[in-house]
Image (cartoon, rainbow, N blue to C red):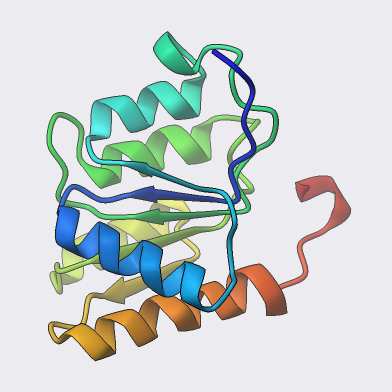
Length: 148
């Protein structure tokens, strides 16, 4: 596999919401390199650099947008893998999900999520929420040099 640079990793199984998020990020010029993965098992392979992602990523994403409800491996388990791995533990992870369950919110923060956003149900609000996340994490936030 050829090496590729990933600015934002979007882990979302709903194709409509994924497309909307990607369009919103690109419209606001927050990321040129977006990788969309739609199932949890493949996301874990990406994080652990195995399978088709073995040796193929030249940089860590600057931001991960993660849904909780995913096929094969759920977002909470993905978050566990991300924060347990020395190479990925400092990557900002924004949970972008429909779950308003207090247990999900608490678990995600306990595991090291940087933010937890409940997806707005209407098109415009969802697109604006994604744009706001992109604005903060890609432009306003200043990671330490060790995190790059």
